[in-house]
Structure formats: structure tokens, C-alpha cells
Length: 309
Image (cartoon, rainbow, N blue to C red; front, side, top):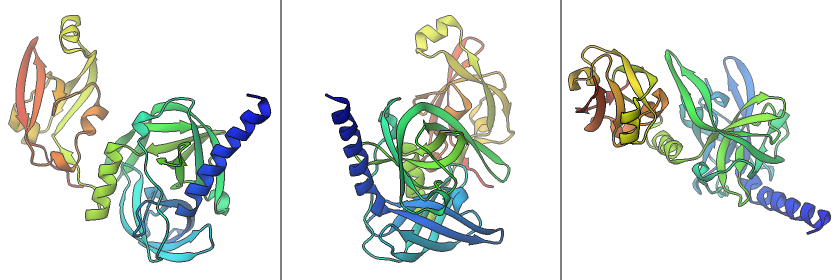
């Protein structure tokens, strides 16, 4: 393939993705008690639900969405989750085309991506680049609660102020991330679309908020003894450094110094891997937990409670 043919192939992919995704992306105008703001959002259902970044609509319950064809319509904030930096909106216009979701868990470093959004107030802007890293973490805060968004996508597709909430699409035009932050010159981050964020989006639509579960432990990663690592197939566990009295973990019989190996059938090697399980379905459910206690394996059952702010 000649250099010219290769360039044409690249251009065709980008233009095809732009043609597919642009009609679904809106420029947002938001007014709060802190002043006016702007951002982007992407339509993901045929009945007018849009996905954006929670920080774009923080403090607002409505605003104006403008699409690439010039249609301008009011939107209402259905729900926002600052801990995942995701929010769901609904527009009052009819017939807005929906973009399809992909699966960010299948992405590979070096893969072509296209960012569509509203940088610097310029609606319908398109930039292209590659995935430069996967598995990044992004700290978020909601009041006293602090979380890390896991598996954040890092891209070199140009992201500027106003891109937040816009779509990051793969070469098939599937939305695989929501642009959320500018991390530095030529560097951007996007919240992935995967099974975890799909659950968060579903809860925002149905309840307007995201319910989270709570066990009542604090921990720190610790290397496992070689014999335990060989037997379990994992290198780290989560050493319990605090148990809240009367918490689900305390009631279940988890003690200081225990090392959490698995919870709900999933390996636990960090605080984030445990928090990933602490979403709505875990509330009130019986969650088996395997511990390492003084060299012995111990199984307990924890019933996580709903986390209140």
C-alpha cells in the first residue's frame, strides 16, 4: 500500500466515524449559581437520553443542547454520579439519532480513536489519535467520599476545554469512552464504557442516582506468601487495617490483620478491586469472602449495606 493509499484509508475511517457519531453529539450550555459553563454530551438511546460528564452539569438541573444540524433544545438532568464522573440527561427534541456503545474492556494500546465534542465552544469538532495507555486511574470526590475511576482510557486525540462529556469512539463508530479531563499537553482521559459504567448509567436512568454498597473495612495491598500465591494464582491480597464496629464486615467476622483474597468470587488485590464490587446489586446480598488469617484460609459471608452520604 502506498503512502497516499494509507493516508486515504486513515481519512476514510475518521470521516466515516465522524459521519456516524456527529449527529448524536450535542454542545451543552449550562447555567448554575457559579456562572455559565459548556461541555458536550452524546445521545445513546432513541428516546433522547444523553450521556455526559458529571462535572459538566454539576449544580444544574437543566440547560440547552445544540446538535450539529443546528437543532437547539432544552435538556433536563436525569441523574449525576460524581464518583464516576458520569451524568445522564434527557432532551425534549424528538428523533435525535443514538450512537451505539462499544466495550472498552476490549481496547488495545495503539488502537485508533476519534473524539467528537464541543471544544472551546466550537460545536461538532472532530479529532483523531490513538489509545496511548489503558488502566489509568482518575481520582473523584463527592462530599467526603473519594474514589478512583478504574481503567481510564488515555488518548493523544486532542481534547480541549468543552470536550468533557463528548464521545470517544472506535474505528467502527462505537462509543467506548466519555471524554472527561485534559491531563496535559497532547494528553486526554476518558471514562470507559464497560460493564461497570453500563450499570451506573442504568441506575442513573432508573433512579437518578447510583446506589453503592458498604462493607466497613479499610485495607492496603500486601504481597502474598509464595505458597499462597502459587495456590491461589494471585500475587496480592488486601490486608485489613480497619474494621468499623457493627459494620457488615464486623458482623461477618472479619478482623484486623486478615487478608482479603476474594469477594463474590472475584480476586481482591487492591482497594479498587473491592470497591468495584460495591455497587447496587451487592446491597443486601450474601457475598462470600475468602480470607487469609494467620496462614489459614477462612471463609465468611458478608451482607453489604447501602452506603449513605
